[in-house]
Image 1: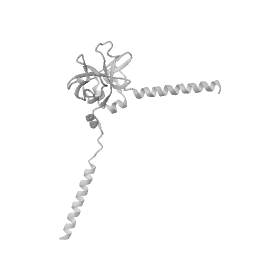
Image 2: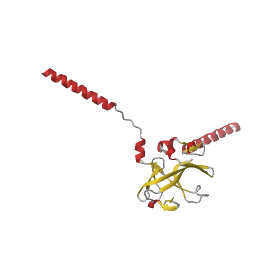
Image 3: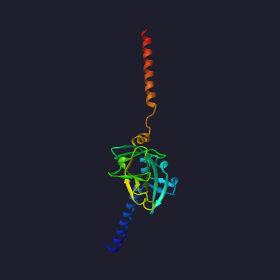
Image 4: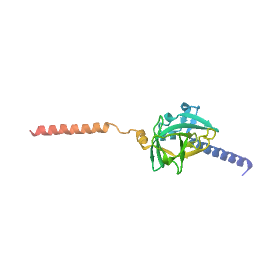
Length: 197
């Protein structure tokens, strides 16, 4: 193989690798920020499909160390199995279920609190980074480092919200058809009974 062919092949490989990396990055992103406020956040299709009310739940947008974060606030609705599942009401949004790793602690009113001890009504602040669709809780209250050290907590849409967001595929036409069949049957019965007299 001559030198020119090797150069062309190498260039093609580099372009293909770069395309795959870019595609992977785009798939993983939770949002793109057109501006530094909630109205400028363009949520990914995956984020909107998973959490239909995520845009309305945005409280503000913050940038630290070249990364953009959307801040959310929520109130604990229920704590299941000593912190294994936390149902949280998004402020201005729906419910999500957080599944913290064992020994997770979060800050409630400036006090570090174990997830196992969170109670109904406790207020939580958490963030979603532009490159990861997960709840992120600062590991400290110190402003200069709180946006660089996070506990990552997986989250899913709460079952109530999932059911509410399902499309309504049923229509009234089956009932109309059934009513028509019953009326035809009743009309046939009247006609038959009239002939017997």
